[in-house]
Structure formats: C-alpha cells, structure tokens
Length: 258
Image (cartoon, rainbow, N blue to C red; front, side, top):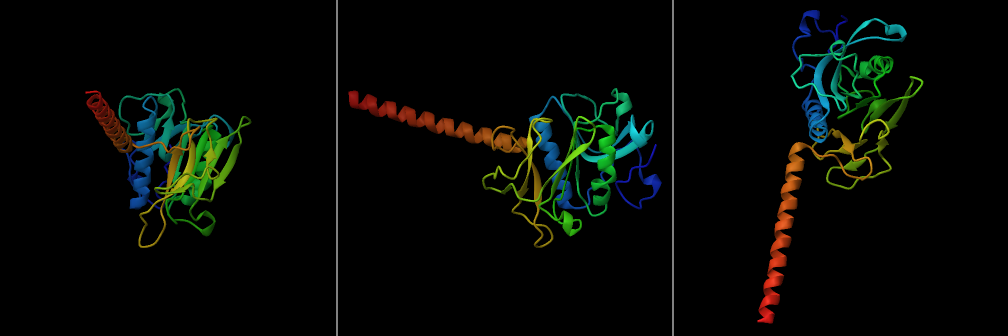
C-alpha cells in the first residue's frame, strides 16, 4: 500500500498500519480541536461511528486511482448510522464492503496544510466522500488561508466537488450566532457548520478558532458530553427552583384562606 503523507519527510518505518498514530497532532490547539470534534460527534450521534487519527485504506473504483490501494489519514471521519463495536488500529474499507465516511475532516497544520487542501481533497472526490472539511485552528498557512478559514467540499451528483468557503466568524465564544456566517450541509448531514473565535489565544496573541456543529433548524451549537451534562444540571436546578416557588405560592394562598 502507499504510505501516508500525514507527516512529511518521515522515515517509512515510522508508519505501522497496525497501530494508531497520533503524530499529526502538532500543537495544543490542533490536538484540542480534534478532541472537541470527536466529542461532539460521538455524543450527539451514538448510532454512528467516529474515527480519529487513524489511517484509512481504500481501493479506488474510478479515475486515475481505479484499482489503486489508497492510504490516507483523516483527523476525524464520521460514518453516519454505522456501527463498529470494536476498537480499530486502522480503518480498512475492504473489511466493510467498501464503505467510505460520510464526512472527513482535517485540521490544518504547518506540515500538512498543502496536502490537505489539494491531494487529499482530490482523493476524497475520487473516493466519493460526500463532505470533506478543512479549517485553520490558528494561523498555520499562508495569508490566503489565514483564519477565520473554513473550506467545505460537497459532492455533487455528477461526481464533482462544490467548494464553499467561510472567512467570517460565526460567533465569538460566549456570544450569539450570526446565521449569515454558516455553511449549510444539512442536505448531506444532520448539522450545519461554522467557526467560533475562542477566548483563549495561542502563543501570545494568535487568535484561535473552532469548527462548530450547528443544529440544522435552530441556531444552537451541538454540545459536548460535558456541556450536555452541565445543561441537564442547570435545567434540573431551574425545575427545582420553579417547584419551590410554586410550593411557596400555595403556602401563601393556604395561609390567606386560613
């Protein structure tokens, strides 16, 4: 099989297809955003399978890659309504009837951004991956791709990719969503996409950005597992306060009747 190009200039024996490889995580923001994406997708879509930081092996079925063995790594891939109960060292499509992910995501890094925006996008198109997404967590590439930067490739019926870009912040952390700055992919997947500018910065004063998943019909961000737990706790507290107020009201009225 072809070697992955996820770490440039690395010796061939670095890659072991039988072991997960986390070497692509080149910075704390890069690692944090992959973890965040994985958390959101696994929490909100438990009947789907999310894979992170692994090699993906395919056999091309068309174009210049027909019958070619393909080895590509995604930061996160999302297989909608598809279960693999066991853990993986890699994803080999030949073991799963040639299934490709419904969504593949790469978080741009200093060593891989060129390949993510070119070769890997073309490979995803040839494989027929419905949606391929790249974004910058902070400034890692040239000015052309300076954040806020989100590029989404959406597969069309004839097999080409429609390319949509977002160069605006959907919201600043803690503020309201600007619905004008959302990329709608809800025809393909059960969410929309946007960019959040985070409060915490990188290496002094570099702004940081997060890919966010937005409900397809309401301006609400899909939550992580911890955020959902916090939200449930807050709602339970609100219900308890309302119940206490109602009880107090009944007591006041009962006292008046006496």
